[in-house]
Amino acid sequence: MVVGDSPLRLWGLTSTQRLRRQLVRANATVDTSEAQRLVLLRADWVYDDAFVRSLAAADEDLALTAPDGGVIALGLSAATASATDAPALLADRRAPSGARLVMPEQLADGYNDVLRKRESPYLTPLVAADLPTIEKRIFAGSYKGVTDVVTLYAWPAPARAVTRWCANNGISPNQVTSASLLLVFAAMALFWTGHYGWGMVAAWGMTFLDTVDGKLARVTLTSTRWGNVFDHSIDLIHPPFWWWAWIVGLPAAGFSLPQASLVLTVIVAGYVLQRMEEGIFMAWFKMDMHVWQRFDSWLRLYTARRNPNLLILSASLFVGRPELGIVVVAWWTALCLVVHALRIVQAAWARRRGPLRSWLAA
Picture 1 (tube, rainbow, N blue to C red):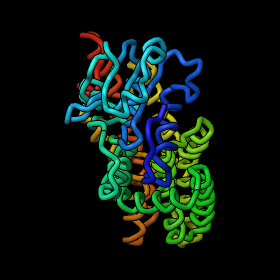
Picture 2: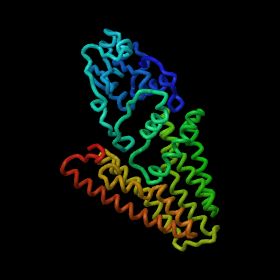
Picture 3: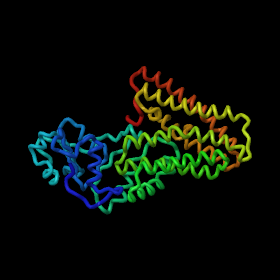
Picture 4: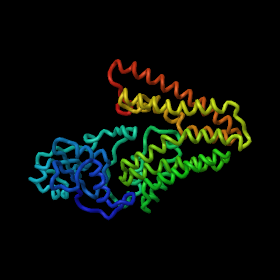
């Protein structure tokens, strides 16, 4: 339940719209008539999803307090909510009798296994003068902590600007994903015909939109199961086809690659096997391969995935040797495949001393 109202908007949403979507994402019902547990949020505050989830999942009556000691959110059983005028109490920043007062750090520890990072959850008053700072913080909270070097360091600032434009103009995440899919095919066609320069423009444009769609879904709280499948299916399938098209296009661009079949086999097989390694690690150790130890998170910056490979190919194109670039991609893919295999062996050995724990969760 949302208590109060605010005329201010965040990422194109009113405070009430945003809080209602957060309640739905936390598996809390907006209709309180048959609710087993009631979560009440003040509309003049901005809450990280972690706080809303914790209030909804708790098995006791909780009152979340601000730094000044006033109550700004409640998580109550249906019995407590019906026996008290909880909305009125929250409007006065008070808690029902018997509710345990908790500070933000007691309610959420900041580890997000989905986004692979540790970051203090945000909780801030919704004030007009602070809107740019609040939106920037929400955007930062939507970003994965362990990803490739381009996504982590090059895209955040422009992606935030484009995400804001999309949010303010009603562009949906799936529309952005659809545009990125068109660029997938455009890049492949251009690589196939040896037009590497324009192909790179399309390819990097696709990787940029691939960053925007996920951030747009998170900041506007419009993530859906279909959108997740749509986006990740494209990400999973298209990279080997780009590298194949790059090899095919070499003769058209005036270059030759005597061992083209071998290079393509190494790249495609290495890509598929690396994905299998990641799946094996997840199945055996119940965590993403790249969050086990600091080395694994560092390696994710450069491992032979789409964006690091595009960096290699961009450099080779810059020096006028695209045929050497794809050979380097093949060698890098093979090396990363071996390193990941060794990490699986090392993780299996380490598990003999007990369950593995991510360094981010420590």
